[in-house]
Image (cartoon, rainbow, N blue to C red; front, side, top):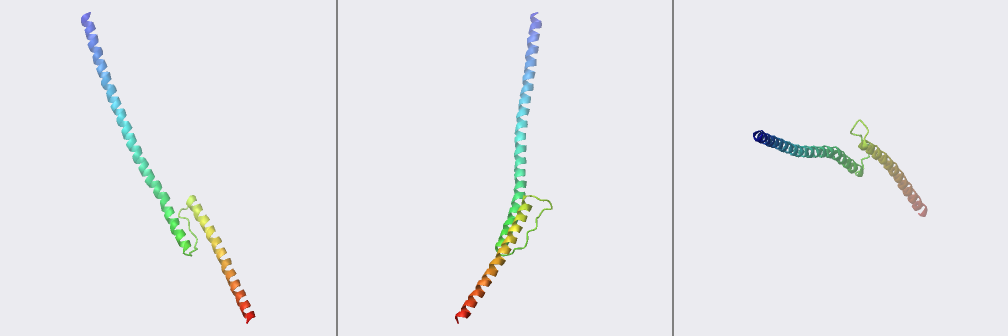
Length: 128
């Protein structure tokens, strides 16, 4: 009986060692999975940031050049860069409307200056 009890104790201890070893391996694997997942997500976020940054910054640079062109007096319409409507296409349409209004107001201002010049010349001719 002692011999059988001793064998059972040895067998139980061996099973416990195997189970502990198996648990240690699973915990190590779990840690590695977490680390690799973190690294993968970090790389994914970095790539996503770069791609989204380019998709936003390129149109902003384009609109900066449009603004410089309009400031220089070139009121030619802006053609949307994409076939489908997005925020930047809507911005291009709004800028085109603004430019048309600026041209209209500039024409009114030029006409006003011309009328004022004619009026001044008529006053000057009456005074002489």
